Structures are given as C-alpha cells and as structure tokens.
Amino acid sequence: MRVVSNVVLLASLASFGAGAGWAVMQQQATTRREPQLENTEVRVWKSIIMPKQPLTYHRHDHGRVLVALTDGELKVLDQDGKHIDTYRWERGKAYWLGKDPPGKMHADVNEGTQPVEVIVAELKRDQ
Image 1 (cartoon, helix red, strand yellow):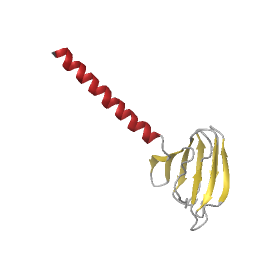
Image 2: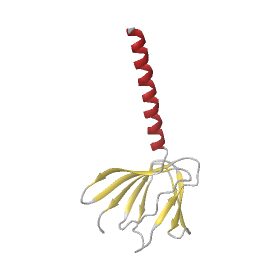
Image 3: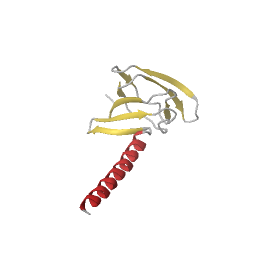
Image 4: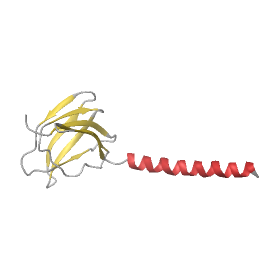
C-alpha cells in the first residue's frame, strides 16, 4: 500500500513539475523587460525581444548605454508604425543611444528568427 502511495505522490509531483516548467517556458517565450538595478542615477534592465513580438511603444527621456548580449537586428517604428531606424547589434559590444525627441514614441521589432537580448543602462538625468 505504501509503495502505491509513493508512486502516486511521485506521479503527482512530476505532473506538477511539468506544468510549472511549461508555465516558465511560456513566460520566457515572450518579449519582455527584466529590471536589473535602479537607483537615483540610473535604471538598468534586460530587454528580450522575441521574433515577431515587438516591445510596446515607449520613449526614453534620457541617454542610455546598451550592451548587446546577442547578435541581432531591431527595426525601430514610430508611433504611426513608420520605419525610422534599424539597429544592428553585435554580441559583447556597447552602444550609446541618446534621448528620444520630445513627445515621440517608438517600438522595437525583431524580424529575425532568434531572440535579441540587450542590457540597457539609462541615465535618470542629463549629464
């Protein structure tokens, strides 16, 4: 009887683990920003832009440093969906991006087949 109970318990745990693993994989398969650090001077996050899942429209009021964790290319669209720029990132390289023009929003689109991952460190004030 005890062996049957242990088998049922193990099967239940395995089923739960598979379900939890699936939920984590689903979360990890979406475009997102993961906060890394924030203080009075800087805000740092990791952006993961999945293929065909753009970052939502947003803006940057301050300059920022971007460090590419993967090779990749992002198209930048303005709030009307018009293509305004293309960035090509090389893994391990750092890039400077200035603040956005006043009142302008943009979205970043990955038209490739692999996720694009970057670390962004945005200053909280103009230097």
